[in-house]
Amino acid sequence: MLIVRLLALARAAGAVLVLAVIFAYIGDWLLVRVRPHEPPAAAVYESLTFYVATPLKNGKVEVYYDQPQTELCVRTLFPQLGRRPCWYARRQPIHRISQATVTPRG
Image 1 (cartoon, helix red, strand yellow):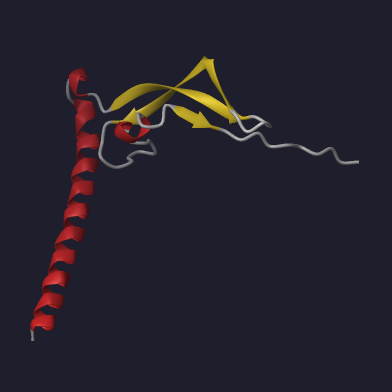
Image 2 (cartoon, helix red, strand yellow):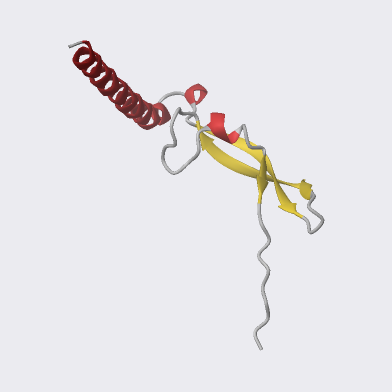
């Protein structure tokens, strides 16, 4: 009897958690759609500077600090409108790219 009650409680808690995430995403999406019509102080987008890094043959990584790039991120909890959230983009100021080697045909 106790196990049945615990399973019912776990199902209810899971349903509440799923609904909370869904409502948070919907609220986040609505804020992105409403904020652009407000004053500029409530801007939806933010520009962040990041640097590109590439791995070298000796195992080290070279960061190109002389070539800063700009990324447009959105001030939300979840990714919206094809942009990464700013809280996530700030955590990765260096983007690693890999160099593809092209072998000549012939």
